[in-house]
Image 1: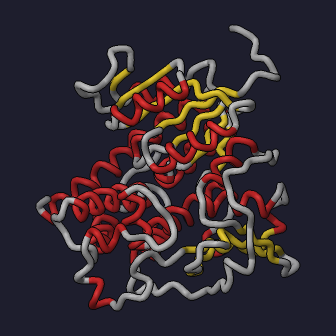
Image 2: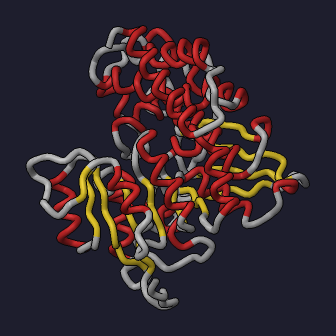
Image 3: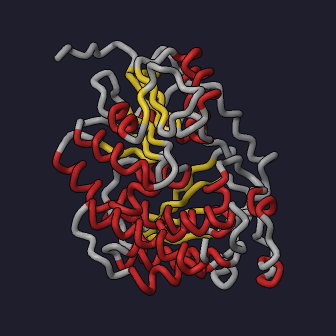
Length: 383
């Protein structure tokens, strides 16, 4: 095995490089070439954009999960390419920006190899949080969150003991339907749901933001990332998306992390943590221009997916995997025009009622629970 120079740029594998977080990460990496080198790129199916990225960054490894005629002959294909990229010797950091359960195996494999995983794939911790923690504890791998809310908490805690923390408060923008009535939500279209007021994201996460299912996933993530019980994790609506999370300490002091709503900052911090480096990609913070900042309670009656997800997290076992699988399937059905927006939480609830108690003692059990939830939603809605 060749020795790794302490001065060479760290090798980074970007999994999901053509998606929203992946393209954001590459903008950051392009500005930080003295510190990082893109050594592996993988994408799901966007061969045209991947080719552009390959020309620009010249990685040693390229993978395409869904190969097609536009793929280069030298590219690896299939889901195995994700694990191959994540476990390469020339990769120090794996930025996992894959959407869905497909990101789980690459995360586990990277951690087993002692890599840092800059994690934007929520499903990894939601489905298999205990397993991920076990793998981290058994080796030298580490998980650093990319989600802006969890990055904010990490920055606010700054190494303090969990016993010092009274609670954390995740902020939610409220999504495009924050002011919609329950009756009006019945008529919500795909275009309505994708019209996020403050963030530009992929289609699936945009729908999750509209239902607040994404905030449920983030609560479960926070539980595993910071070893906090669910009764010390709260959510508040903050439409401006300037404060990304609050941490309240046992003495009553509250520290909040603020920035303009850009994912470039949490991506950069996940790459450099615990260091802070100069980067001109994020505009200066102007408290006058960004004022006022307001806060509202969550309306669980209009957005039941949040409470369903938190309840699944509290129940533990297979319930979070069922929540995630049912949500992913229902969102896909909505985006395909097969169900209504308001059917999504109903699909999740139905799956949890029937399948929440499935076995959960292994990776295989958890993936089976995820698959069962998807099958259940397809059966219920005939989609």
